[in-house]
Image (cartoon, rainbow, N blue to C red; front, top):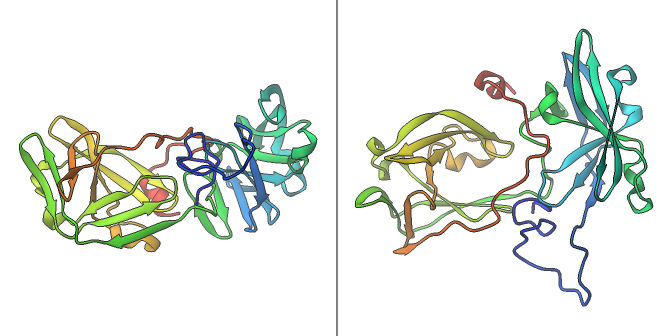
Length: 286
């Protein structure tokens, strides 16, 4: 499962606990070899290419990829003189990234002198996801953030009854919704459009994307802003939810077999290196 974000075991909002006699440290960081070739493109140039990427899982953050300095094009990194301090890993040196006539300030970093227990991070460079053109695993573009190898999605059919209301208005009622279980998230219930009063769904501008599911569209329902969403063309791995609709239980009334659902705490995550703004054509052409 996702180790360090949402409600994973190393996150601040973990829903389980380790069965140990002594309490664990309040913050646990975990690093491991990604075992996938990863590349970084900037201004049309491959500035990093490595089969020895280290993935750092830090509590309540997306995983971050660290490249050996030897696998980064040397002239691409320009020391900025900026140094910040990481509470666990010490001083952090920042770099501008340069290629051709383009420079992105504060776009890469490394830990100057990590503690002995984190020595595997010595001499490794991480890139700000938002500042780069693209990240790839082999020849496929990875969107959003580095893929968490422990992240899993399971989709199940069910014969339970899901009903969605806004006040006295029934927006959806289905006897065959689909439930999506995703690491670190509470279950998400998806409804076929045939079981929805689509006149109640008002499409809104602004789409997001998920590295695991694809581009997401949103809908207002009455005065409830972005109260529903849909992956109109979900990735092949999760295409069972393609064009189905899910509803936010804190914005509209969602009942499962008559029992009202309530949003679970701990569903937020601190973005760490998410993509810059991308247009739809760029995302779909990944």
